[in-house]
Image (cartoon, rainbow, N blue to C red; front, side, top):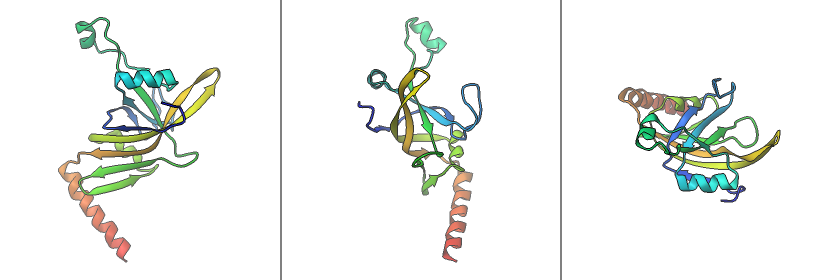
Length: 167
């Protein structure tokens, strides 16, 4: 997988969601990111090609079953609205699709996500002797499971927006 090609991933599982860019133990304020769990075979190819593939420590249950259990591979993915073309992030619900922007993408931090399809673009870095390929969101479609109140008031909000557009 050449480092200059985008990577299309469908039906991925997200971990460490930080779409708002809140500061934390492993995150500086304003850095929006998340992780994507990778299949072993893809992780090996990506790591060999220089992508910044990480490994989760195995859980205690996994270590009890197999003390040599490998950790789960994952890819850190960054979201950058500050430079270049902003990412296209689309929220998919029963009512349709909504393009999220810098102000609304934070809704995904706590959403009940049922599916994610994602295209990441590579960015080769060389910082203080550390080299590799970072992954940035190019486009992402996130399907969520809304609760009944979200559906009810989301429909109301859509009607209000349509009414404003008609005026």
